[in-house]
Amino acid sequence: MRVAALYDIHANLPALEAVLEEVLRTDVDQIVVGGDLLPGPMPVETIERLRAMMVPVQYITGNGEREVLAARRGAELQRLPAWAVEGIRWNARLLTAKHEEWVAGWPKSIRLEIAGLGRILFCHATPRDDNEIFTRLTAEAPLLPVFANAQAEVVVCGHTHMQFDRVVGKARVVNAGSVGMPFGEPGADWLLLGREIQLRHTNYDHAKAATRIRATGYPQGPEFDMLEPPSGAKMLELFGRAELK
Image 1 (cartoon, rainbow, N blue to C red):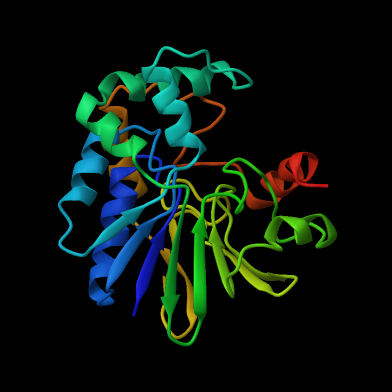
Image 2 (image 1 turned 90 degrees about the vertical axis):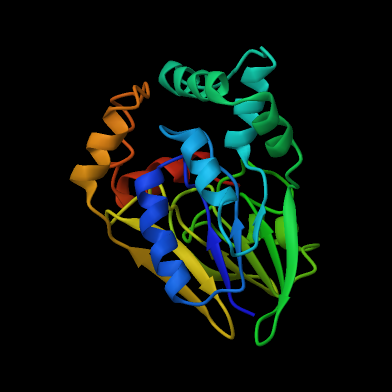
């Protein structure tokens, strides 16, 4: 079985389209969307593009979906910067009741078994929480209790938008990176899982993507341009302050 893991799309449809072209050429058996499909500039179009796929697609929820659904219920979005809240509420207004019901039904994790790799656990950030932060540089000791009960040979995660492949205790932990907004080299990051795990990177035309995204009216804050995100080095420094200790 071959599985494409697409994480943190953030409704960046141009990036998703480029990745899907490559995914379909690899003859995958299914796709796992690993949370944070939302929020972003083209939420409805991104949802409908994935729902039109002929390849089976499974979804897990991330902190992004959780916040968008909370906004649809009228909840206060605490501990988030004003520009992020604006974008989340903009997404919430665009979704229909059917979209909301569908997204609300996504599980927090998915388990698959792939020959050559063994048991795979797909989660958004960590097996226990959709918002915990760790990177390739995070010390192993605080991560051991987080992954101790994963019951999987491989854990696939995302959330921090930075790919890595490391070991925590007995588990191989692989971050899929971000399709919609990877930190580091411009493009779109994802994983291909088969008898081995490939960290994949897909390039696409950012100028054309920027034109399409600007036309949506998405209230993206200047502090966080999804097509020109902060560097990997800067984000590792920022994540180091918020990571599991």
